Length: 155
Image 1 (cartoon, rainbow, N blue to C red):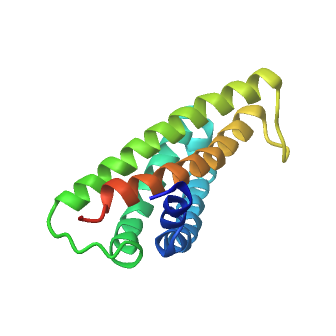
Image 2: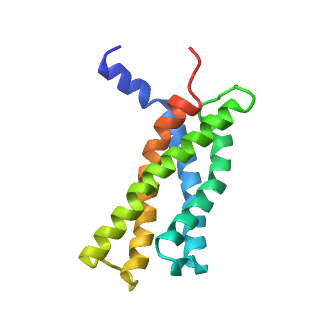
């Protein structure tokens, strides 16, 4: 299979369905994340608050994501705990990488360059921006992980 065919197979109907599920999941997950962070005392806890808010929202949104992607996107028929375990591992790894890069990186850049917007102080702006950057990184990593690991096709 040449590169063009591989690219066509990668960006197929499953990719489009993943995007649709992802939009819904992002609206729910990101909405929860910002509500949890900004409407609780977590917004006074610096990076710890960002980790907690994003972790709780990703856990809750991942439950919805599992069922939508398993049955709608990838039409995975596998039963038992194995697909659940692979999905959970994928989510955990993608989350750790995405937010492990986004939170400290954004915090460092915003703090060292005194970057802020919306009338927020620098730490609050950095925390909110890191949640946006982390979610973008997560989406890219998560598609690859779900398609080729969590719900991989049997050959």
